Length: 293
Ligand code: GLN
Image (cartoon, rainbow, N blue to C red):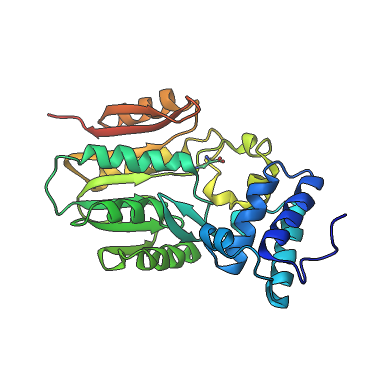
């Protein structure tokens, strides 16, 4: 028998109850989700659960945890309930206007870091459609001498990105602007990164409910053919000469977009540096340099 609420339960018992409740509601990752929610709501780390698992929740904690479980049962993703998620091992606060950072997007960071492995500082980075600021913040956290600019069309996203960069200790090397792709960007960058919206408009209706209902459509909708953002990005970089000689552009792509994105880039004077697959074996990140001569 599951008790009616978490009131009076120890952390460990509340976790067990939460996990059973979510499993009973058909949530696939019930145990993991219940743990993330309990840790997030109580502001604890895993070790607090292990070392102090028999501490009893106070009434506020119990009702917050129960409220979080109810939201999860109603289909809301854990990251949205907590308003926070981890990327590159760093904590990021989320706004409704920002995409939940995906593990696959860490590949953009890996490809970008590999591209500048033998370059001297100070590097200049530009993140187009920065959202929560996760890609730029991860890059700056790995490149101590680097500076970065993040651009997003959403004012709320820009505010969130600014907060996240500062909270992760790179705020003094990052600046964020509201702008439409390259329109607000000036200067010359060694690294340009982007995880733009790339889902074709008709495909959006086929995504998982948790993505469709809770991720911002503006961060997913790549126009009728899913490629609209790449056109804007490649055009803008070319027109404004934003990529420094020897610099690298790394973009996340959909699993079936390597061919068309490659073609768009070639037509705009870029040359391909590499294509990287994700853990599922899907094409995920394309990188480019400027064509010489
Ligand atoms: N990979 C995202 C998804 O799972 C799509 C993100 C994007 O369009 N940039 O829906």
